Length: 183
Image (cartoon, rainbow, N blue to C red; front, side):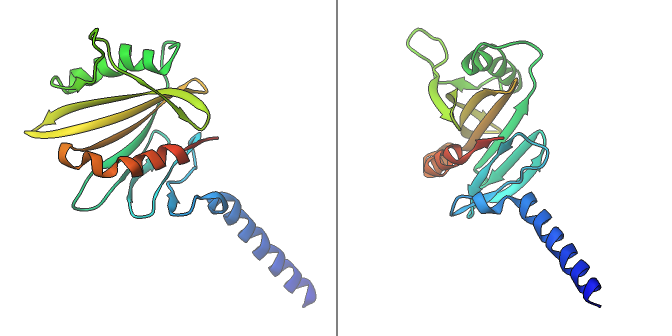
């Protein structure tokens, strides 16, 4: 009888340990939820007032509400060529392909006409941020994309919102950027 109880308690302890290790809940910032970490090299935390839309090894996305679809997505891209910097990738690949999908996309530009990038850091890794806009089916959208090269992959975090709602979520998006971690 004692032996059975010992093994039952041992099995319960192992099971609880497994779930505790898998969830990683112990290091989730207060006020945030973990989008899940299985199969990806990053930890993405989002405000507990936002909703998880999708999480798989290639993409994670969250949105604000069922009436305000402002959203943040994290995508992982394995490039076939080498890029010296995140801004080089954005300039020579990302925007070229984006303009193929949205011909009216208007990236923020410098006075000389080149794309305007802001230096950013995500979990100690330097990257670039670009702001741009596009009209889709008559609706104006604003975008803010963060690009980071990490472990040979390119991580793009993109915030998308209707133009009139964009500024209302930038603080929450900045919080998500500050909380993101690479594994």
